[in-house]
Each structure stands twice: as structure tokens, then as C-alpha cells.
Length: 287
Ligand code: NAP
Image 1: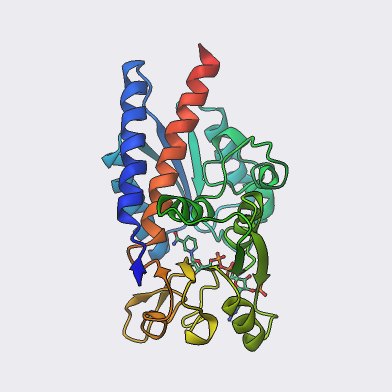
Image 2: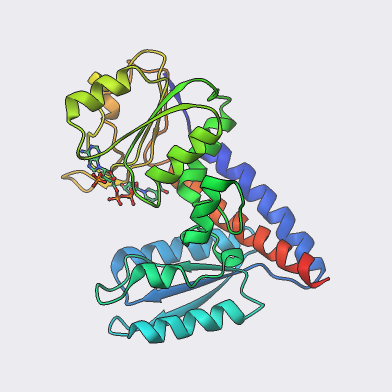
């Protein structure tokens, strides 16, 4: 079985980003990511620290906009307006979920498409259907597709199953695979496990984004299958694992992304690349 490691994929993206950032710096432009965080939950803080590190490594600057957990929705919208109007901020990332009192849909749709580097607004997501991109595609879905391309896995005319139908991962992935001429099936929690197993057994490519341990086992596989494991879960001992029971499928499929070491690092690398691209586009508009 081939292990489809994310590192060489992410390294290539990081290199492209660093080159672009250096070119922009020659014009006194520093690609800048604005992070909007409401409250201080532990996983947001951990992700923020790793994003700051990842940004620094490729010449992307980070500006943090931190608001107390009991902020009002209008205050968040005001800060977002400032970020939208500030020409020195090229990309905007909002930590979600936002506090339950806030209308997340309203807030995510206030990000200007050209600054929506993780493709969370309806305007950005609409591009997945029409091909008319005003923003960027969601980084996690793009990361899964980038890994498939990097390892030369053909998609046209092949059967692909996506497990999960969230707006962040599953649905964008289904559209991206369709755009690349795959025959796409989407499974989710309302599809009986036996049915999902049978559909996956027929699939050349399975992308699992359910966020549940052991969503996929040996019964989902065939020997020619390629699996991209998007899930991030933790087992009883606190060890990070994907959706796939890696031990059970190890000698039963052709290729699998590891967790950790697969999709996650590519997602972060793409996020920074999008910031550099947004800065480049903004610079082109201003000259
Ligand atoms: P989500 O919003 O919770 O969506 C999960 C989806 O999986 C839902 O559509 C759900 O179905 C479906 N599902 C849940 N249990 C299932 C099961 N047993 N069988 C089949 N389908 C099932 O999660 P998400 O935001 O899409 O994220 C999915 C996973 O990807 C999570 O583990 C998350 O941590 C991970 N993730 C990884 C990265 C990365 O960079 N590697 C980035 C983002 C997210 P229903 O629609 O019917 O509820």
C-alpha cells in the first residue's frame, strides 16, 4: 500500500508561497492574514499558534483581531468591516463555530469574496457550482484534490465516494470531483453503514470527511482503491486518528493518506498560499 504523505505536497505549496511573498515584498507589499477570534477556546488558540508559525515560515504576516466571548454580533460585524476596508489585510480567517448567540451565516457572508481565503462565504461557495470564482475554494477540500493530483491519481470517469456533506468539506469536494469528471456519490449519517460499505467497495476513490473514528473499515475497500482521510479524531488514549481504521485497511487498498501527516498540513499550506494570491490580486488592481 502506498502512503500518500502530505509533506511533499505541502512543501511544494510553501515554496510557491514564499517565492510569491518575496516578489510582493519587492513592491513593499507584505501578504497579510487577518485572524478574527471571538473568545479563547483551547483548540482555536492551538490552531492560531500553528497558523502564525506556518505564516511566518512563508513570509505571510498575521494580524489578530481578538474579541471577548460575550461580544455582540454587531461588534463582530463592525470589526469585520474594518478588516474588509483595510487594504493592508489581504485575507480573512474567522474561527468557527462562533458563540451560539451569533448568526454565523450572516457573519461569514460579510467577508469580501476577494479576502475570503478559506472560501466560507456563499459567494465563494457559489463558484464551485458556476466556475465563476470571486473568492477562493475551501482549503480542506482543495487540499484533498491537490493530494490526488500530486500523486497522479486519475479522476475522469472514475467512481468517487465522499463520506460527509458539510458545507466546509463534503459538499465542496463533491462538486470539485464532479468538475474533474468523476462519477460522484455522497454518503452521510442517514445512509446505513452497510449501504455506505457497498457503495465504497465499488469506488476507485473514497474521501472520508465524517469526523468519526472508524467510519471506514475493511468492508468499505477494494484492492485498487485510493482513500483520502480528511477526518481529525482522537482515540481513547488521546492519539490523533482519521476516519479510517488504518490498521484494518492497510493491506486491502492501493493508497491511503496518513493522519496525522496527510490532509491537515496541505490545508494550512493552501491557506497561506491563498493569502499570497489575494495580496497579488490586490496589488494588480492597485497598479
Ligand atoms: P461536520 O460538519 O461535523 O460534518 C460531518 C459530516 O459527516 C456530516 O455531513 C455528517 O452527516 C457526516 N457523518 C457523520 N457521521 C457519519 C457516519 N458515521 N457515516 C457517514 N457520514 C457521517 O464536519 P466537517 O467540518 O465537515 O469535518 C469533517 C472532518 O474533517 C472532521 O473530523 C474535521 O475535524 C475534519 N477536518 C479536517 C481538516 C483538515 O485540514 N484535515 C479541516 C477541516 C475539517 P449529516 O450531514 O447527515 O449529519
